[in-house]
Length: 74
Image 1 (cartoon, rainbow, N blue to C red):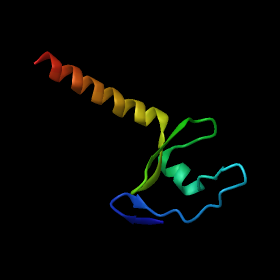
Image 2: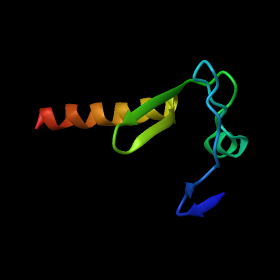
Image 3: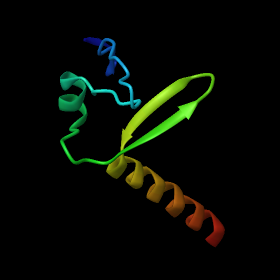
Image 4: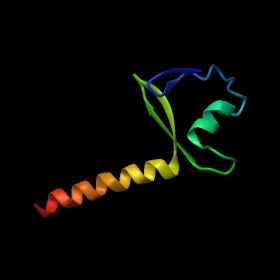
């Protein structure tokens, strides 16, 4: 369900005995998550858990590192 400004509510999922969940199909389609993709699970005790495709996070991390390196050169 599209809420607003690219923010979504995909419904609820049940956590299995081994702590597994199924990412809803609509979420997989919107975020381009396919079988075999790596995802990074991040968490904040106050804000909750987030799932990010590992390749997207790598791009963000590289930008941060580049920014740090550029600032050190100044």
